[in-house]
Image (cartoon, rainbow, N blue to C red; front, side, top):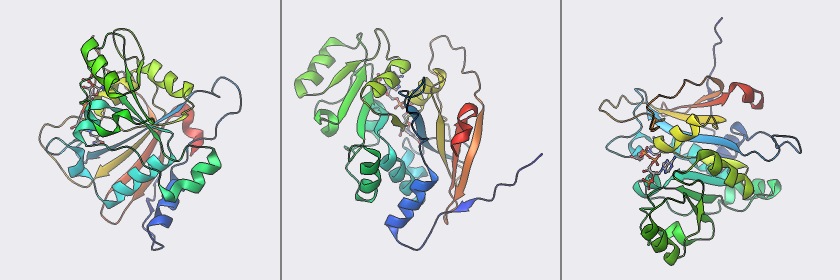
Length: 268
Ligand SMILES: NC(=O)c1ccc[n+]([C@@H]2O[C@H](COP(=O)([O-])OP(=O)(O)OC[C@H]3O[C@@H](n4cnc5c(N)ncnc54)[C@H](OP(=O)(O)O)[C@@H]3O)[C@@H](O)[C@H]2O)c1
């Protein structure tokens, strides 16, 4: 049995704000359960971009894979999230700035009881984040690390005014990362990678949804994939089945897919 998905075209003429609001309607987080086991568990969505042949970077950065439509989806997903979860390495490499309130989503966020802008959670074991990295000391930024992180680096970041939270002893435990998001009332998690962090989320079986942009290029080269397996035992990630929830295209040939866990497939 085949299902022919007609891709939804999201390139309306009503202007940028309306385009973004239309996009937001294509990417709803599931409604929060008022009570029961799932009531406090954050929903973990990842947003990644890859070339047709699966490359996650071009010349070491994901920027070469992007386009205007991808930027709009990226902005929309941020506009819907409570926290942006990102590997510290990616935040530095990609020059992440502090997420600002986005006027387009202000009403939506206020209606949901969300803060004006998502928080920024940087994941790092080495704590090799430059103390003068601008978002580091903002009240909306938290560094998720572990007790075994180098003491001198910890001291340097604390001296700079950073907020550090240990999520594990020897390693940064993914379950603890997501639990910390729950404790901080960040139920809508947006993981922006990179591949190591996403690999850890997948390995812990905590990924609920993947938003994947396929960039219309064949990149070649030896760039990695969106999910890296960094587990010490080298056992490899067991493959995870996902269900397609939506497929969109834009005028530039980008393809935007949403994949949800089998047991979450009722959200679309
Ligand atoms: N195509 C895309 O959508 C996309 C998205 C994001 C990034 N990228 C690209 O991917 C490349 C980076 O790949 P990457 O796999 O190295 O990125 P990453 O997952 O962000 O990992 C980089 C660093 O983040 C920290 N980290 C990540 N997961 C961790 C965990 N489970 N526990 C503790 N620390 C963790 C580590 O920091 P410490 O070493 O400090 O412990 C690690 O070295 C960059 O070139 C970036 O541009 C592409």
